Length: 464
Image (cartoon, rainbow, N blue to C red; front, side, top):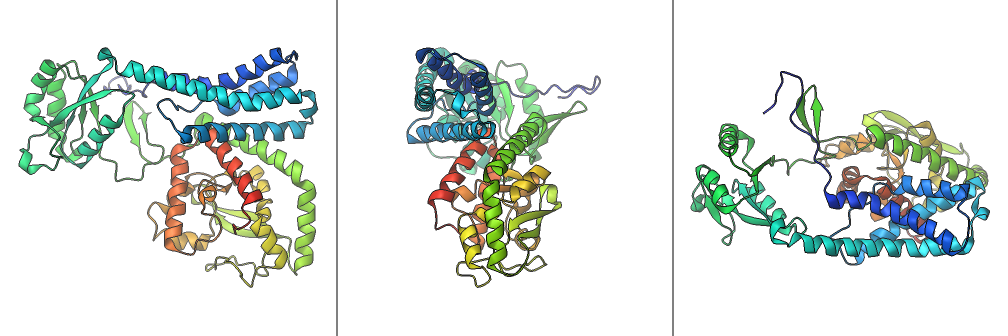
């Protein structure tokens, strides 16, 4: 229920769990603590450059990722790639500011090796503590699901799979008889909705998850009313699994709770962090590659007649048209309503153009687009306007990828979907990765993508 008389909502954002709070500060604190301790081990004074590096690490790594409860090679890869991304930014910053010589090289090498090892030890210890805590008798939380439907079955499976929270799933409640519902044979149909309040009291149920469809609103309201006099926590699970949710969240608009299903991740402080990181990274890159930019410009000019920079209309943030820069790699400059994607052995690609396309050097002028605010370093790759017209009618949630600024590199590109998309299936997979990026964005994910992109540029010569 919502009290509109004083304009305030009774809804609030979910509080961080203890494990999430610990994880948020563990990674950055471990990295900085290792750095400080190594100064003492190597008898090096902690001066201004070291303090600046420590602050930069805190900024890049906060909040830390919650890896507690995870294991195997995946955690090792996650910690290592994240740390390599941080080291890459630190190295670029040190080179740009000409401060690398102020650090003890042995200390830096020791820090680069020991910090991820200590982070993995912290994850392991935290996982063991959390697992032992979750199996204590007092920590078990009995839960029931109201609604033996598809979403209810799916949600019950999630509850049983959540070993860290230690839910004890008791059964389903539904007014239909068992022969009218399609739950697995081993699952328990514990009773009807009318029987739920007494069942809670007798069996010590802690959580009730309501998965009834919105069409059952009168029944839902009546059920909530009947459960108000129990001690169980009540949760409503809306049937939104079929929707392509992007950054779903609960907001407060004039005291009325609003469930947002599709939002940009770059709002508020996150948007500021994203923009600052874009400016910093682009400035450093352009400074470092300025001689290379001149050499490529000369090569393009000598390779074939035409301008050095190819400007093409692309779709940017919120569907607005932007002009994207690339070094010209072809003898044509298609920018109309019909554009043929480049392919291998394309006769339109010059010999020098094939080289800069294969090494992605033709994308370097887009760092100027980033400084202009039209693009981001990391984000969904911008497609030509003609391709958007074609694919938005064929690929589900295609235009949702434009809820953020397009990027020079992206999650799809480092997962094998670079260059031309010759088939509809490839475009669908690229869009799936783009939407996954929107759902899971963090500065840490950006660093991971940048690190993987560098590896691809130098070691994947087969990419087009």
